[in-house]
Image (cartoon, rainbow, N blue to C red; front, top):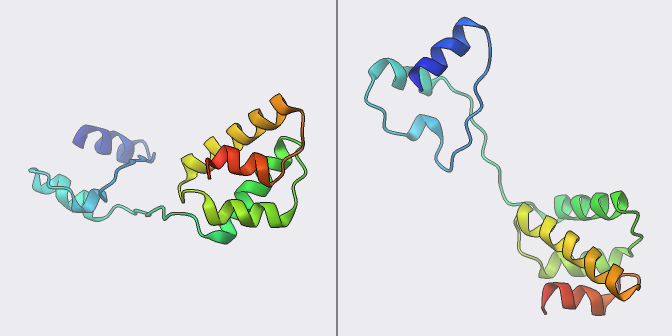
Length: 116
């Protein structure tokens, strides 16, 4: 990893590291590398709030050309797990159910997809 940082620095490139623990909190043995990691910029990705969940759901429904009422999205937000992965799984699942039943999305289909 030390070599990767050196090459990126020499070539004026960037290194993107995805980790559950910020890189500047990891325990490395090389002092030089520790000092480099302390200068890294890091960002924490939080769980989505209601506003972001609404936007993600609306965008994905729109991308799939699905028209859905606001009250249905509000219901979904109150009952779905707050993770990006679960949101995308839900969208896929509800689209699949809706297509199989050849019905537009309603509370019944949402509850089936959520297993509520």
